[in-house]
Image 1 (cartoon, rainbow, N blue to C red):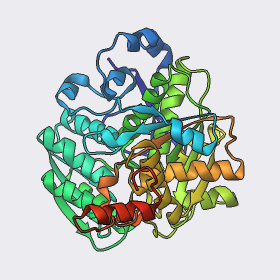
Image 2: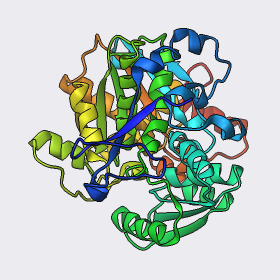
Image 3: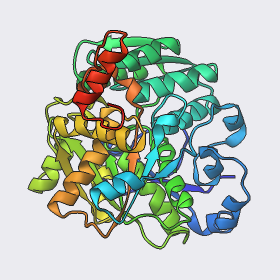
Length: 417
């Protein structure tokens, strides 16, 4: 069962016949990123609240009628999705906000939201008879692809910039990927992967090129809505690099709105680091997006030339949202805050959304009486070096009770002094 109707080019707006191996617009070339359009009237007859109420598949594949996939291999996949949505009451009180929820994507198989896109990529590769999948990545897309390819018996060739964090490199190697560390930045890495994919004929998992992958990412929005009884929060905050994730979040809410399952599309807040903020710069100046430096600890969103700008900018514009940037220092503080207040360990890009919420409350973009969902996109153990920067080293004491008592007294813990 498929409700896919056609592609539509985000550049020339032409409708294009849906073919599973089509990647970009035949008229606009690589810049012609495609959207998948569905027959919502036909889908409505099958997808309603009762459909979800009676589903016992608590993974991203519970949404298969809303995806461009053949479901036959899905049951063999590792469990992706249906990640927890926590009511963050301690942070909510600390920030003085009406309601705050955290979607914890760090519990996915490779510990990031990127599993959602990679799951789609692996299924499509199997459907089309590919034996090797490939992508360029700053880390999370790569590790997620390697993870799911390994489980389903596919080979993976991964291109990463030399600055990729050790935690993510270790994941790639453990999963058995053929890892190519590129002596350059993400732009150089993407270009080499593009040439290699074309030359060797591998399946292309680059999310900004492959139109099917945003459909995987949109399932995070579908889950947020369903977990909130189809009454999503006023705002959803998400970190932004290439632009594919925020585009997917918008697409998910858009689909639900077209089906009449939600009454509103939440406003989207896209957050970048001040060290790499091409979307924010374009938003503030109302000028075309330009290449930016890649100078941030948040490697997963350190993308100087976003490959999916139109969908991301449209997501913010059409949801009446906003873009803003936060400093790396603020990101590090947010790592500690999220962990100590809610027990959730996020990597720098994962907690950028929390830093963005704080900044948005400070400058009035988000009001205290509004409700917010933060998408925490990746686990902190993926980047242990930067995690060390967010905290102080533990105290070192001799194994003597008196030394401990003196330390507790100096620390001001009267109960245990």
